[in-house]
Image 1 (tube, one colour):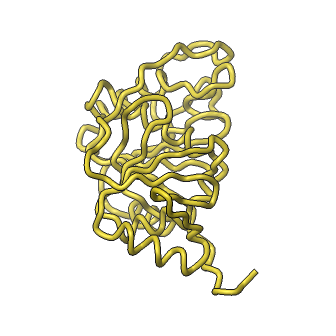
Image 2 (image 1 turned 45 degrees about the vertical axis):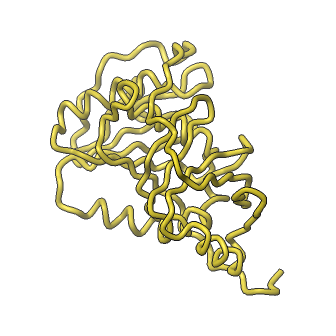
Image 3 (image 1 turned 180 degrees about the vertical axis):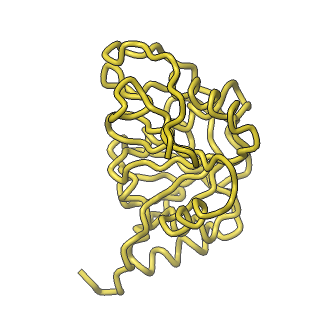
Length: 233
């Protein structure tokens, strides 16, 4: 596939300018689910959905409800949350992820790896996605990757050890201008990414408060391992 034309890039070694946090106002009348490692909490109730019985209990509590997901532990990684996200994908009416630094949140369509592959196979222009890596963001479309300052590196590298949300926002707006009929975007973090960093990356998909660049945001999470049977170690 031919690469998408590159834009103008600043020195990747410079710490990025602080980008304002944009998103949607926190939704009302939702269940607030707190993630901490493999555990999920609803008020005083705690669940470890990797255990089959806990997954069933959580499913009963979230079924048909809107759920706002927050993260208590900055070291909670996406791979640890796959069982919880699988329950939310099939049972919750709507799922939001709250930004860790501001009172805004992002409505999400959750897709596991199989669902993501099915989405990619749909015949539609664009198929824009952000591959979130430890060294930055790789922006990929149906016609190729948006190159960055290093053509072998990410489209938007980290700068000064921090995610460059301002540049991500600018480059996504540019891609949206090219793929004007693309209504959805998938964020595909590496599975070792902290969930708080996933939420911060979603802020780059908004051009202003309540002004998302795309109608639908998709988050891809790892397919869970088979649930443990009761009494398994």
